[in-house]
Image (cartoon, chains in turn orange, red):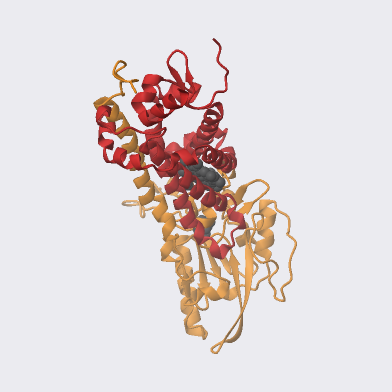
Length: 293
Length: 221
Ligand code: HEM
Ligand code: SF4
């Protein structure tokens, strides 16, 4: 990603001002997942495990292609296979790569009480710092996508990092690198949005998917992982992708108005007793008067 | 004359002193106090980023998270212990109403205008019941918050309600606790000695808890 350091400052033998000087591109990153070209090969799952150093997990069989029911603390990336029937398209086999959405307004970060356990980088990546995690799992409650997963042994929570370590070194995330069909793309949010919209236009024009659209939910301020869906009106079909995800209302309420009410109450309580001490002071007992009964 | 260390409540000692709290009552009070304080400090740390440093009473924030619920359970058990000791004496008596009606004299230190109180005055009773019921709410909500991993995902929204209830119950007790500490240490001289050594002067007893003092005076005759 070009950033300000790589802006052109001067050009040799160039007449007039430097073209594009002082213009800097957004450096926020985005992963685009085109569900219409995913073949469910799981190369991204394997690449994720390889890069992050986890072993493949035991699989389960439930009469479908689904290898395991959910992501796990050591399995951050899972293809969800969904068999969906509709009149328009008959039987469809919808596959969706499920992982952290890297929300612009992350519910996990909002809910977290531990200093420094969750950070959001300027490029949009939301990352967990396990050394600061206290294991309270408030993030699980705050996330509308059911992403953070708890390791009961270490009492720490884990999730997809969008390969912040690779991205920081100028590489694309491991899953992107492994994808054989080109259904995964990585770049600036602007470019990925543009690419996604062009793909949607193509689907509208050349296929019968007239409900195709981009999934970049506004309720969480947009996400840094976006989908192209054949049917953007019913994202639930893709294995529980919420239609209008938002930070749970009670989490926002408890983290803001309730906290401030409590804080004001505490300050008034302490100020109140101090004021009482200054105004009335301690009780004194008149020794002679008492002790008569 | 040496006095035995464990004495019954209400015993009148030489040198004008009265036994206000037995050893068991004092021990129970301090177990309550220490466990409560630990929960309060570690809880407040998770409540506000500005108070996060308080979690270091548990060693580190992560150990504070591990210990808070355990100490909370101890606090609840201590509260039950206290309940067996004091539930009868904390029950409301008819005289309490008059005391409550005239509480402003107590606040303004015009105690001569205040109706006499029993072993515990109506304010102390109120504090007790606030702590008792809050302890039950804190335990019930706290146990759910202890193991969110056992909560099925479709019920997870319950936590978004339970956590604020836990925090709100804690805040109510903290408000009461601030007043309790202020009164014990600064506002009512002699009170702290009473709960520390179990003894108060006869003047203190007569001044603050006249009905109680009259009763023990009568019993000792
Ligand atoms: C009675 C048994 C109790 C249990 C089982 C319990 C358990 C919990 C748990 C599991 C949490 C989540 C974060 C953490 O683990 O630290 C919590 C938070 C908290 N606890 Fe307790 N607790 C108890 C008693 C208390 C008491 C006596 C206080 C006294 C002030 C208290 C105040 C708090 C506060 C302020 C929070 C933070 C809430 C927030 O995040 O806004 N708790 N408790
Ligand atoms: S998807 Fe969940 S874990 Fe990922 S950034 Fe959003 S709220 Fe946090």
